[in-house]
Image (cartoon, rainbow, N blue to C red):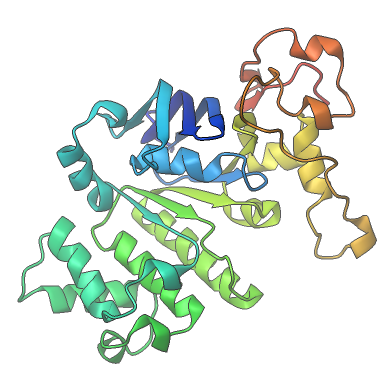
Length: 323
């Protein structure tokens, strides 16, 4: 049974970046909840605000980014108002994040065993006597063969899939309650992608860990996620269980994403591109940021701010002319 109290609760979050070319309204009134043992997929095109939402939740946002409104609660902790000292203890211990391109995230001149050991010493209860044993256990957890030998390897001596397993081992070494995986299979071949995602899913369920999967791959989210949050240009436009979303998508953007997703038994001609592009997030923006790309658009769509409303049990939508 799902805990009724979410582990991660993001409410009405708005974020802007102050740049030389103007203020970028990266997120506007973004809300989502993640419960223990649940895998949430956050999907959308590049620039939709997926990673910005995750980095704000971890409070590792770029210095140019500023939260203008909203709240983030992680296991009872007020993330936006917590001290940096508290957040340093929280990151790694209560919540961890893995990134795309693991080769660039790992230190190239330090063995992977020492890098995992560094995390354990900083966030765990490891000491010099126990750290070796704990590193071996971490490598076994992510199913790396011959861990006694692998701990002495450098990242450049390992494949992309192995490097991503090392990143997962580092992220999970201190038993976090929340894992955020930001495009964890980028650059990996299809077989390795499946192995990495199987690993994340299995560990999430075994540990009853709340997991957020950030991806542009809707098919992957369908295979591994319990619930999917669809983002477009800094807005959450739809949020529903995976089953309900694919059975009856309500937002025009969601249907466009589905039509642009390759199907296992489909032909290339069946894939349809999404017309237009994301709007410029600087300056004044319409209430519906998808309006310029939407075939169902009417002038009434932009009369006032949109809200994310529950249109059926557990199915949330921000659209004035849904399907």
